[in-house]
Length: 204
Image: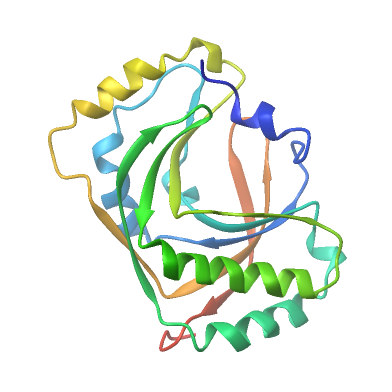
């Protein structure tokens, strides 16, 4: 049975609270290519992620808002490491229906985890109290389950995915990482951009 994503996280990330997140964000063209095959994947209890809010999370700094940390020092720390890290081309081609989301998984994992470690360690060095929730693998959610998740049929969603008769592979060039202040309202995730940090060779 599927359960509400927002219900699951409400204990550690209540609606409306703004936490710092590090993301890889696809360009509009990359997003359009990524989501095009999945437009028919929907249902009551599944909140589709709008194109403008597609994201690949590196780190959720649980309980840490921007006012609780020296943002400039954090960005300087991340920039020091990021300027030596090569951009990564992530390929997303593994659609999956989980208990709380429909997502597409990506690869390669190793350079992605280097980015996760970079922002996780820098955030920890700020000394600001938070609980780190790093991503273990690259993925982007097409939709999150909501309060009506018990109406969803996971098998039917998987069957719908199997009916997509076209290539599903899409790429995202991770040549910069983004720091945002992010919140949810129980149905959608939103954020306010704070800064982007270019990787080696990327224009500022």
